[in-house]
Image 1 (spheres, rainbow, N blue to C red):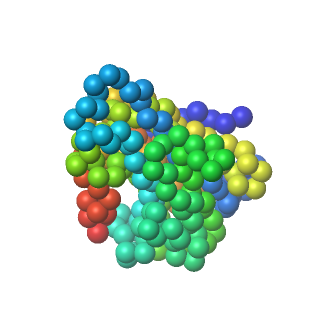
Image 2: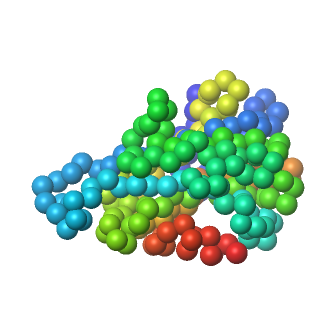
Length: 201
């Protein structure tokens, strides 16, 4: 049975004492129900385009290089340790997936200079579209054992994210040679991925 995590909780990514290496990280969200007149100032654009990315950080909390940011324009990490399965422009499920976007992880291939895999989501072109996470509902992250498709843990983001345009959803990190997952759910107001990346350079 999958573990339902609360903000700040952590779990080991192992089963019966054995490290799990092949994971799928699913991120999901739905656009909030449209109210009459709610989007009247948005120049006719109502879809909230949310992008999921992974920042691969070293022990110093910094990005080792530009190739260590995995997103829709750089879908594969070093040594193919991470694969981004594609961008969903409107939320909800796509292509038969249960999730809005999915990211495949091979922990055994993660370079030794990487200690943390940070999962972030941001609203594309949020300033021009005047959009924020208050317009999104049912956001979550889940960790799946890729070998058998079993969901190990999930974390539902239930806080009020009005006026927030970026969220650090969770992270996978090394601790004493083993991998763990932490539910974070921290929201901020960066205007795009470039501003998020700048914090970790």
